[in-house]
Amino acid sequence: MRIIKDQTLLKHYIEEIGLQEHFSIDVNPLCELLCFDKDDYLIKAGQCSRYLYFLASGKIKFFSMSENGKFIPYGYSKSYRVLGEAASLFGRSPLISLQAVETSYAVAINLSRHRETLLNDNRFLRYICSLLSENVCALDNNIANLLSQSIDSRLAAFILQNAKNGIFECSLAECSELIATSYRHTLRIMNQFCDQGLLIKKRQKYEIRDFQALARIAGDAYAYYV
Image 1 (cartoon, one colour):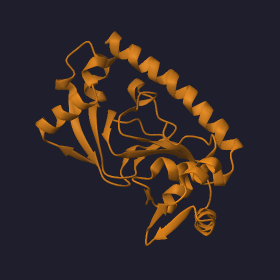
Image 2: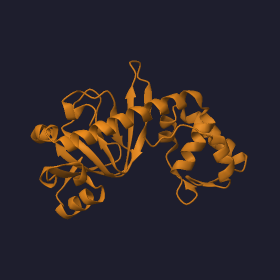
Image 3: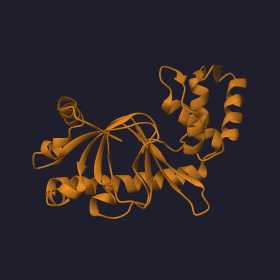
């Protein structure tokens, strides 16, 4: 994690994500700008975060580990999202970890300094209550869909959601974690999609050749943006 001492960039992100509208106080003096490189942790399970984060750019994955060391994915978030509102804001230890998938920037509020200020702002608390309700509903829906959808459907949905201009180039290892399967199984299905003419592999990238066929396979598969 790096603290970015660029006040112009900080102000830009605060305005871009519309942060002030969720507060009745002037939020600018409370904020810092933090940068996370790939694989940096924003929050670790069991450790109360020093900050409340407002993800401004980049991509973050959510996960936990079972007692036997099994990776349990909860999805990921791209661009704006509040992080740490469910536990760290209230001084509790989080149950899941948040880790950067790519270089990411977050507007952050130091909780040791400003927790009481936040908890005394009724407009902010109403916003957090609304977010928590939405997140619980989304998580319940995602888990239910995850249990009912095939790996093929999840992978097809993941490809469609992450392709840019018809090109999919996400790490297959990362992809495997997020759709809850092995790297070997993911690679097998990717090769199958290529054999069926749905994809064409170009070095470390895949070009989508048949969007409609992939969409049919994906169906109503669980959405990984939560």
